[in-house]
Image (cartoon, rainbow, N blue to C red; front, side):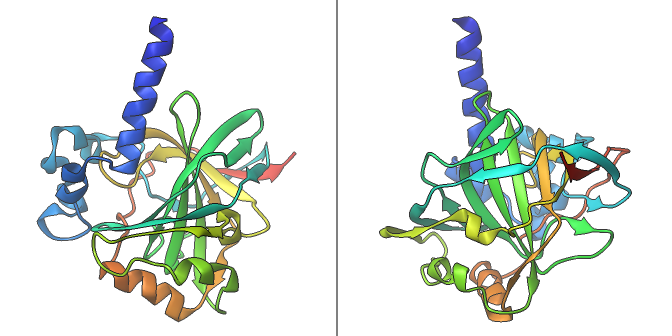
Length: 253
């Protein structure tokens, strides 16, 4: 009984950490100025890992090791639009029931959010935007799949979502009859890089499994600029030291 209770408590704490449920905590940090990344550790005792952590994210993906690994299986269902314009970015809360399968492990898709520019770099190359899909396992652990975005053609699959983006800070948009599938914001080819890192926002908790998809998707310049313009600036944490971590270049089984 104690073990089960501990697992529930850990899962609950992790969920609060990742989603930023506390309004006061969510509003205490930003991506610039005195509350920006260089000072996150000073804003709350709970943010200490933003400075002291040794496995922080994001990082530059290079010097990878090839490894035969499980494919990413995105068993996603459609979800009604549930968007929130927070001071630190636009977040889409996802309806229950969508799963990420990695071998025998299952993670439930909780939300996805947008970052301009992309937080991870690939061999020194930066991208104007990324979308991070955040999943949680039954034991409370997190897996984040990141789709990199490059400027190109208008993405028709994204238009349903873009047409309902909350433009004002604090605004929420819920459209029960407008359904989207997160899979439409990922490439068909889900080859990936994998490493262990952290949340890229306070409290910067570590032990997060990162899956960086190798193949970017395209969005038009206008689509990218709309996301950037809603928040009014960059929503990316600077690159963090790799600290000799292994980065795996996944090869399918």
